[in-house]
Image 1 (cartoon, rainbow, N blue to C red):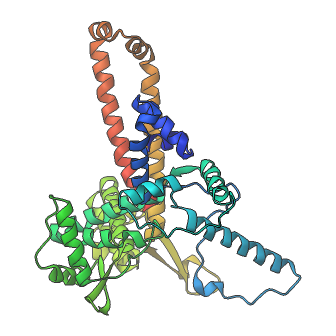
Image 2 (spheres, helix red, strand yellow):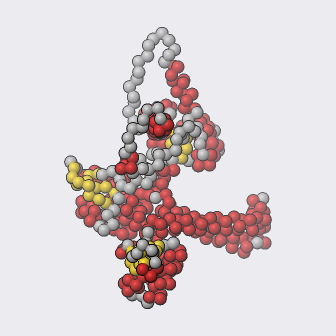
Image 3 (spheres, rainbow, N blue to C red):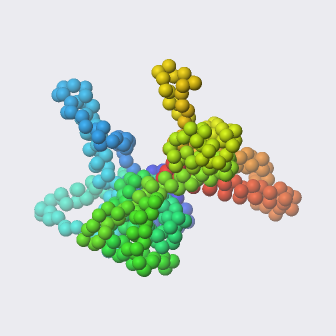
Length: 426
């Protein structure tokens, strides 16, 4: 995994050679172990085949109602564009079929380990070398196949962990244990890293996966009444779990991952607003979020604040991009004296604004890290030359202060990275 992250795209032989060199072992001795680890990473979808340079980019999302068009006329430019789109879609579908296909050598190792059934052997005609021709051709093709890290799978699993953590904070450890079992049961069916909902699973399937996780993880402690916890989650105002109907295994439920992440973004936004504008600013923001839009006089009355303080806080929030102002003219001339001005909160716009600020903050931390390294460049060169003890005697306090600064900056960068993931990747 480290080699693929550093190099980007490598074929199987290059991955094994680079990993063996990193382990300081001969390639032939480490090949079997590294192939087994590579097989496990592909089966868990952490590694995927890299698409060819001719592969088209992912299709942008379009609403199904806005995609109803009549067939293009034959011989027109529109028909040519339609045929080109169909060819790209076909190439994309072919790539999806081959995306996690294992090489023949690793497939044989997987069959030996019991990971999958052995396919039926094909009969070859006698009296010729046609049996070895396709095999040699397939081996040559596998040598040019490039592999890369599947970042969507990592984002998907980190998103699941964020959903579990959010439900544990709001609904308790029993609800988090049930949600973890549901996500574990449906993760192989998710085709998108930002899927709004999981696949529906029945109550009996949830119980079976709860028992499976309990046998695998000794730290996993599920509740006894799984059905009661599922009903409580479906009746919750946040609706982290939705009831989808009845099936052979009892009631069926799905996980509303988009709703959980939306609530987590709202809590992060609340924390930032409270830190910048205080409790009163947070009160105004939550009031507008609940009531959609209000006039300035109504806001001051319902927030129980003096009109002057409410007006000042509203304009500060407006300047920061967390609230917006909507004009509602009473007449066609749009005269200010005959126009109503209402305040409102657009949570998506506020989240985008906060995400851009998080990127700027991360950039500032990276620049500060680079500045600190440049300022202590001479001392670090002496340490790299093996003069650490001499540097410790002469510049001990300066080196200790530099280490503490690095710890603070690294921890701040990690916090910013987790928040950026919530607002951008999840």
